[in-house]
Length: 290
Image (cartoon, rainbow, N blue to C red; front, side, top):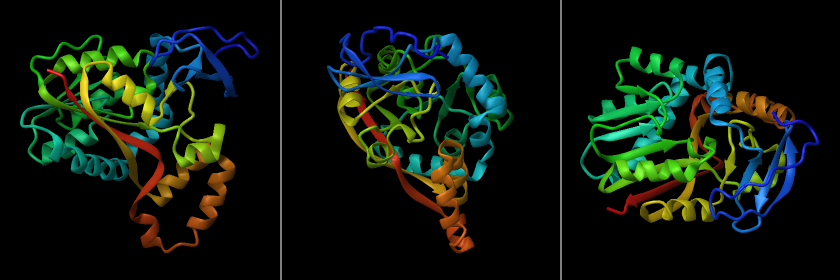
């Protein structure tokens, strides 16, 4: 974590390359800055890859990712919804899920008869996915050398974690078959929840998330690094109300307490149902250039 009151280091924008960012707020000791050129919001300073890897592994073993990974029913609901959205768009051929965690999306895809493998950084998550019989490689996109090209590459809730999202996209573009499909989900800082909650928005989560996109900035980034036909649309994540309230309490205790009081008055069947909630996320799809 950067020292309180430390000068904000200058750094080229990950989308437009401009070196002209202004501070917008501080949260958990991290300074958030907005690029004057394109509007991308980022952390300053950026965590190093080693810091992020250590944080990621610790989160899977005892932090927020551990709680999410343990919520099997919730993760299966989300995976089925994502599968229903991307499957009709993908051409025939093998799939790769980057940042596959413990394999919820892989399991649903295998159940649907897809030829799919995953890539994941966390040793704990990889071990769990392999225990379930799923084909998962451990490593990053910098380390991984695929043996084939893919018809579909998914990276759900990944790109916002990466210090160099442009390099990430260039690598994925090189792994896709001609007219292969890329599918991303990520937070949208132009969404109503983000604008309404300001710095208290749950996706402003340093150092987990290092870049914060709008539809315009993610579209520009994807189009500039090996993709065409970029489409961006709102994504509503299916969550059970009890689980949503539990996580809201962790990110925003005051709002979580209010939501919990409302939820407890609802019928049990409503609280157990997966509702597609407008949390402020977007789905991005694009085709490889070659």
